Image (cartoon, rainbow, N blue to C red; front, side):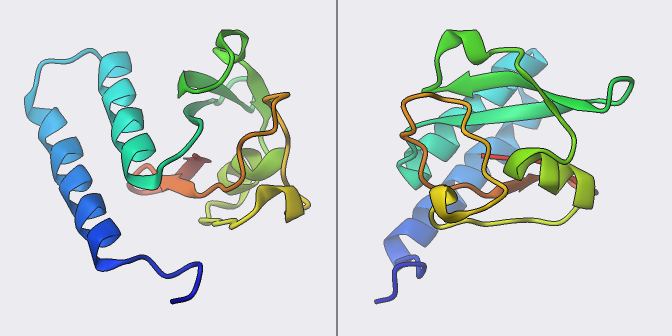
Length: 133
């Protein structure tokens, strides 16, 4: 099996996670708590060391980390210019980008000094790609 091929078990886990995420809309959660629950699902399905959701600040043309898991607490609220790093590239171009090894990706911007993050992919906000995990 190729490295980038997901197994039926992983695929089933991802579908289950998407279902659980979709049920959040019917619950009365504040937006930060809902985003945290989404991160928990992503971390579990993809066995990620760290994950974050960045939101666009249109007035300053930057992305800021709204919620994160597995990153140092000081990264909360970190602002990254649109166009910088994988996250910034996805926001600038509105296209998904999946990297098997971010250290081999020229767009990679290392936020966490531990360097434990090794892969990344975009999250689609519905109508426009605006971030990555």
